[in-house]
Amino acid sequence: MCRANEESEPSGAEHEVGTDAAFTALLEDSAEELYESAPCGYLSTLMDGTIAKINATLLDWLGLQRAAVVGCMRFADLLTVGGKLYHETHFAPLLRMQGELRGIALEMKTADGGRLPVLVSSMVKHGSEGEPLLIRTTLFDASDRRAYEEELLRRRQEAEQARAEAERARTEAEEARRQAETGRTRLADALAVLQQSLVPAFLPAVPGLETAVYYHAASAEHLGGDFYDLFPVDGKRWAFFLGDVCGKGPQAAALTSLTRYTLRTAALHDPEPATALTTLNAVLHERYAAGGDPRYCTCIFGIVEPTAETGHATVRLASGGHPPALVLRADGHADFLPTPGGLLVGILPTAPFVTTETILAPGETMLLYTDGLTEARTGPTRDHLYGDDALHAFATTHAPATPQQAITALTGLLESFGDGLDDDTALLALGAPTTHHTRTDPAMNPPR
Image (cartoon, rainbow, N blue to C red; front, side, top):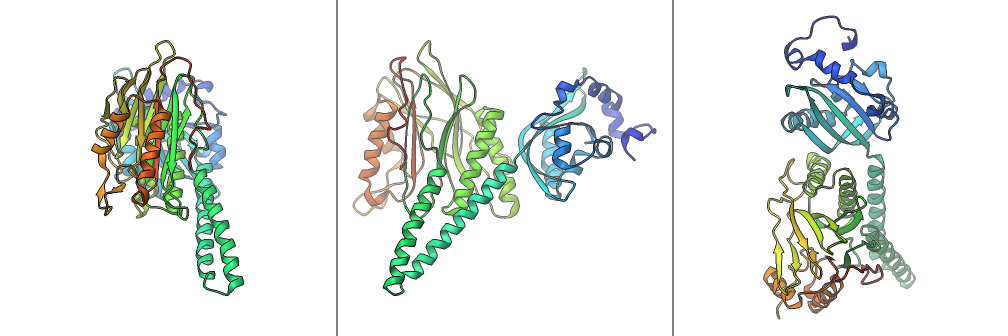
């Protein structure tokens, strides 16, 4: 029988948290607070998970009636079998311990038997004496992300299949060889388009900040896994990230797409760098590790806020197993920026990430890079890695430098490696200009 229709007294844990107090707190909510027709779902539950309030948006998504849900179902009852298991073993215990969770990926079931992927954020509301009363939850529809991933994977599988067919056709007659050559050219074009879709075509202009970027693709026949992005989160702050997913080919491309989408969504929800990486870790672990196919990435994520009055730029960033950022200071020296505590993203169900902060004074540049740079093979026999020490020395030689000057110098360095550079390499540089009148030219040094 639904809770709303029960007349018996509550018992056990329900009595201890104060059911009457919880309902009183719920009655304080206004229609505006529940955002009845908001583009995202809202619900409030008692501490045992029983749904006490739910907005029309979420009911429409699930195809349910309010009378069948409120007081009759628990939040876990709205989830798929896998979602319910994750909720009971991870989500609910963490929420009880931390009091708040943000951007957790779960999957809900609809009345017609379908599945609805969502990003869930929950917060425990406490009474005047600190006792937990109820849980308020916000849900964002992630269906578009899922459809995009599946379509992207399908297109890459088709491209790989086309390449295999073209390779077999090379051994046939002259006409077949000509057809195979045409097919391979078409494939290369398709892969190039797909590769470009995984990174922005150009960087947006950021007031009070100079930027530059470079992407080296190690092979025209395989989709790489390096990625980067730069985008606004509000009127003053900009989010940026750079990373590298495991593997190559269609699966790596799908992982790259999921990573970029998740970080963008997480940054708009909560731009704290450590929080964004925590959200990404939860999404990747839920998507891959829980299914027996663990996949991971390294990533460095940051927020930059230029200050027009001083010309300085405040940078907050966190790292998940990624090489540290390198800062070229205005006084002519360079140093790595420590980002402690970051594990590979997606390996463990929970991973610690720490946000660190630095200030870029006018004329100073911060460089992010993937390990293709430091793991380039050098020497006559190509049996030595370029390494962190050589990169630090190279940066010190060129400091101070603008972002474009730093990227130009590093592009020349990459070209000097020749066939020793056998991995994709992404470079992203951000800098505070020496004057307050600065620009970012999207046409300068575009990705290739």
